[in-house]
Image (cartoon, rainbow, N blue to C red):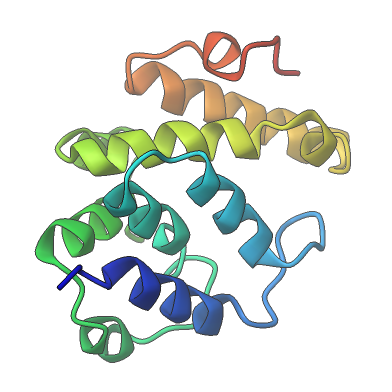
Length: 153
């Protein structure tokens, strides 16, 4: 019997992101879906759809655990979740410990840096976020412009 963890991840994410919006005012789930669609494997897709459930969604640890996702998925989602008071370098260090989290973080950066998303933000917020995305990419050993296939401004 095939593992249905991707189905459970999608259902969990749909509940977690229900009614939530991103910085641009769009349904948050749209970002998670775009990141998921950029992935190649079901494990990557499961992590991608869930990567922000604790930061941007409404979900309890109890609900997350009740989904009975494989440990590799749980560990990658945990690595993707920034802790309060944690520096960006510390967060990326945890991401680098998980191949699944690294793959998803790359796609997350690309989606966050989409021109049509950035241009809808106030200039100061856009500049602050682009600087953070650049630093994150550098800590991952990447160049943001190369990762996105265009200059990110």
